[in-house]
Amino acid sequence: MLAALNTGHEGGCGTLHANSADDVPIRLEALGIAAGLRRDAVHAQAAAALDAVVHLTRDTTGLRRLASIDVLTRTTSGWLGAHPAFTVQSDGSVVPGAGRSAMAEMLAARGCPP
Image 1 (cartoon, rainbow, N blue to C red):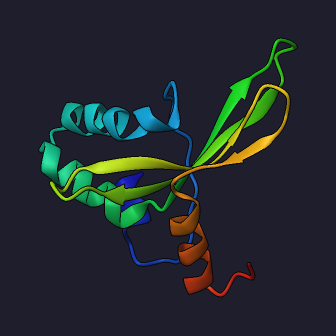
Image 2 (spheres, rainbow, N blue to C red):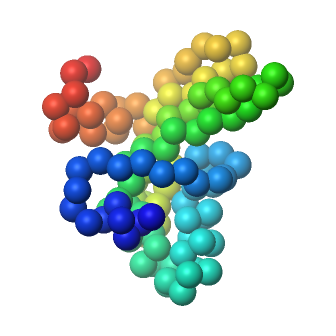
């Protein structure tokens, strides 16, 4: 998936099973290492390919619901990190997170209205 998303085409989507958006970098790392990639290569490929994570969860009725939207960025040490832009609370309210401004900048750079 990371190789396909790094082919230079604009946009893409995929599904990854992880417990939370915070767990996405570690899950990608585990899958990449199992495929024979080095840890730093996985993080470099993921950082180049992925901008955001839309994390879904199942509610008590079994329906999928939006849990959070996180922005993915590289840390100063080069590892990929997830930063919540928005989190949906159990009552349905949406709470902005620390990654909100990074998401706004990312969308603006792509010509999306605020």
